[in-house]
Image (cartoon, rainbow, N blue to C red; front, side, top):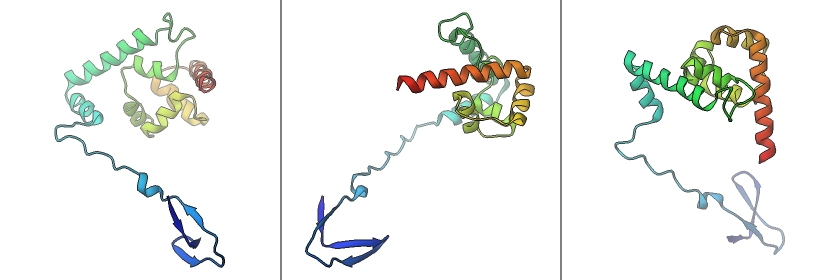
Length: 159
């Protein structure tokens, strides 16, 4: 903490105070730590997945792993998702990543993430594209989106 006898009237412009009053200014830049650099042998997860997806065998293995996750952890008969599918489970059952679904829909991966979190309001055109791409009818998609909304609300209440 530092004491100053100048007042900041506009960003970057300091003027002298008219009285002897002092103010305290907190300089936040002093507390920001720079991010450490990644080790030289570091590989970004997206780069790693791209490398594995480059050949057919690796791509098939990743798709099988995603299907396994959908069935093992998001199974309708399991504890985690006892009320049915969400867009996430429908995507995983196809063996697709969020990135792949985004490419198919001609949108971005963060948009897919928001859809899967249940925090995105979708247009009817996006719903149509999703249902065609996931090979489901609009009623199934509607139910999946409703489940996601309930899950998002439950998570918000838990916080």
